[in-house]
Amino acid sequence: MNTNLTQDDDSIEFQKAVTSPYKCPQHLLIINDSQFLSSLRDQEEPEETFLIVSEIQQDIHIVISSKFIKRIRYTIQNPYNTEQIISSLRRAQQFNDDNLQQVHQYVIENEVTLKIYTSYANQYNYLQERIETESRILSNEIKLRSYLYSILEGLKYIHENNCVHMCITLKNIECHKNEYRQLKINRFETLQEIKTKLNPDLRKYLMKTLPHIPPELGDSNYIIQTSFDIFCLGVVIFQMCTCQLPEDNSRTNRLILKKFISKELTNMILLMLDFQVENRPTTTTLIDNQWFNI
Image (cartoon, rainbow, N blue to C red; front, side):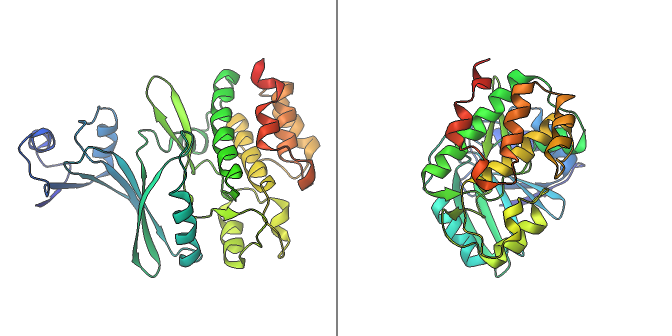
């Protein structure tokens, strides 16, 4: 049974439908209303619901059925290379790390659209909303330490599995909050193997997608290395601390960062943003940085 509900529908009937112990496995409710989604986020969803959130042309769909799992669905339209995305997702399905969102399933809808199902995150766009929409910096270095450590542990796992994420951005780092916020890396459609030549279609996609371009993308013969992710993460941390993108000048970036954060964290971010690939630290080196022990 499919029922389309809007904000004008009786929310009591909706709650009855969601919590009813008698509903059949085929029972399905679809809500296409962003305001209703916002109100739902403030409540604790019933354990028996299967929650899928999808952004399709700015419409948000919630699908609720009687399964004991929660997932998020997102849709890629006009992907850079369908076959390569499928290969990346197949590899990501094998990942098992608490700092990564799990890829449960993907569906090829047509030649230019894929639906991807990943683990549910109740504040999935927390970073993007806070930094890009609300322009609120993260100045608490205790929180920054926790957030950065989670991302680095996730990246370390990816790199140890001979892969590079290739698109670490605010949008692709999701958040789930229980007693505290835990950040998790998501969106693995750009996942690539280390030391392989960068696909020209992916290169064009990244040039349009990344908010600040790693200098090595200017090389059409670029061979993929883990240092690419380190640069992208440096951009993300710079944004979290300043609500702006870094400049292509180390001295300028240092002056900007010094206004907001400690010298130790400033130095670490500048190392990550080094234009010389060989000068950037690895995830292991960063995790061992003394700043995490201050």
